[in-house]
Amino acid sequence: MSENYCLEVKGLSKWFGGLAANLDIDFSVAEGEIVSVIGPNGAGKSTLFNCIMGFYKPNSGKVSFFGKDITRLRADKVCKLGIARTFQVVQIISDMTVLENVVTGALLRYTSVAHAREKAEEILAFTGLSGKKDFRGTELTIADKKRLEVSMALATQPKLLMLDEAMAGLTIVELRQIIDLIKKIRKQGMTLVVVEHVMEAVMEISDRVVVLNSGKKIMEGPPKEVVSCPEVIQAYLGDKYRAVCK
Amino acid sequence: MKNFTAKPITIAGAVLALLLIFPLVITQTFPIHVMILVFMFGMLGVAWNIMGGYAGMFSFGQAAFFGIGAYTSSYLLIAFQVNPWIGLILGGLVAALVAAAIGYPCSNLRGHYFAIASIAFSEIVRIHFNNWSLVNAAEGITIPMMPESLANFMFHSSKLPYYYIIMAFLLIAVIVCYIVATSKMGYYFRAIKESHDVAEVLGINVVKYRLIAIMVSAFLSAMAGTFYAQYILYIDPESVMLGAISIQIVLISMLGGAGSVLGPVLGAAILVPLSETTRVMLGHKGTGVDMLIYGFLITIISVYQPQGVWEWFTRIGKKIK
Image (spheres, helix red, strand yellow):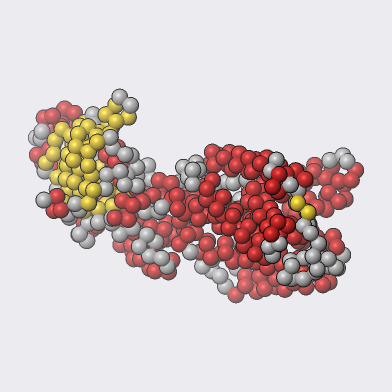
């Protein structure tokens, strides 16, 4: 049964002292699906990412990836198995050019730098950063940095891509571009888990939405259903959103 | 590296040729001695650069590896008559093993904390050797006289062979560093230097690659240590394990240009003659003027060229193009 899921999280809890950042969370992601995780600040979205990726060791619960138990596995091993992620605060190698950044990601699957470079060029063409490949990481705009981070993640050739607020702080035009990029990535058969605050984007790209509040999952379902759920509106979206929906 | 046109290769070839001819033209002992020190500290700088400049582990304890190399070969020589060339390799291996043993528990230390640990480590090693009767404690080891030959790693009549040997060692270190810098390892080291988090999500085994960097660096530093022992023919903890040596190595690498293959060599070429000549010219007066001048020049470089002198060279190179 569980082999049918790309990612399966069961009863996951993570405590920081007396605070439960994640409490008994269950959710699963089928292959090829886009699942968004939403919720107010401090709801435990990033903690959930960190537990899945192996940055935090969960106190209890189980994380499986294509049926394989990856709970408490170190992040680099999780990455090797095929999960890549981006960070809420962009993490790139500032000392390298755009191309070198992506090459570093690609080297996970290649020993030779020349082969990794070929792959990296291919990915930069896909994500639309080819024209800036010789720029330093520090010379990029925030939108391009996020795009670069996605490129680096893709370069590790994952089966599951987890994006942590890839759209925060972008202009409307940049937002459109990143939404298009996510759709393009999906078309290639990628499975995505996305933490996002920009509801327009969540509505547009998600197959399903998981809503967290105070560390607990309060709702899960198709986007339309989720935004009309009173509990979600009260916890996160606010009454204004209800008005807009109507 | 991409624009590696014929020009830099010609320059490198010319410099190499000049260095090969140098001791044949200038035959006084002092300049040759200074050049030998330049090569030796250049090698130590290149070794430091692999772990400090590329992998971001700022070691202030390289003297420990230098000393372990010197002591391993010298002890094996006086106790078991092991040939110094074999001692050279064994010294490198011992240093690499010690580096791994201390590096592993320090795997999660970053930035300043790693630097502090490296100082503590090298001081522990130095104090231990100062009291370790097996290696003559503070008395040190005198290398026994042997007939002059390459096989014995010993020459009495001329410094010339030492000059060429250490030049070859430096060349080896530079080549190793170049291979590391341009291979998968170099990319991974630089990612680790940026942040462990970003390295891990790119699938990099941070602990493993950090250990590789430390071990390669320790091996090369130990080689320089064995050379020093065979050149000076006397070692004690104060001459091969002193914290001042570690600091000198960091200084050379940082001022020359950390994170570039030849930066530390340039740093050694500038700082070593500077410190040696100021010491010889002014040191005997006992006023400390030599150290004042040396310190002043270091301050000048740090203020006006904080990325290291090498960066300045590459900038000029780009302008010429």
